[in-house]
Length: 201
Image (tube, rainbow, N blue to C red; front, side):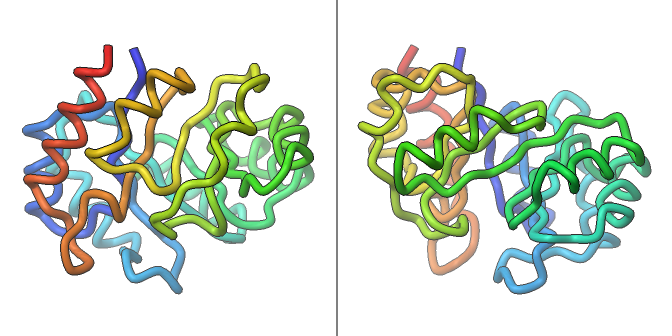
């Protein structure tokens, strides 16, 4: 079954809603330029209220490896999602600092982007449109011959997640803006997304 990730949680109520909906993953954004940014101390407090069966992912953009590893090794997050220009050398450096899983995100504009994704040394890959958080989808037809399991992101919402799962069979679907109203999480949309994703099976 396709896993579900609800990303960009920032408030205690977001955590409560996630606990009620039981996605496989939730995401905290540690990129300071994002409107969904949460400081490590706040993420730690939010994580304390998260159901133990839900894994917390930290989203980073070109953060120093030591800071990423500290959050992983300290139990604030379970998985690091690398959403910037991190390369193979960066991943090797991070591997020396932590044994926790890594997700590497790729912007998909052409088949060449998918070729790079296939070669990633990360545990998981995520395929997105643009720098992430854009709320728009890339050309899914590019994925017809793609063989590596992937997180699908970009432009997903309650209205199209079932279609995406049935057409592409991703390892996981990742949503942020598609479950928001006026820039904050909306329980009704979160529930609709989770239910649609599960009903697709």
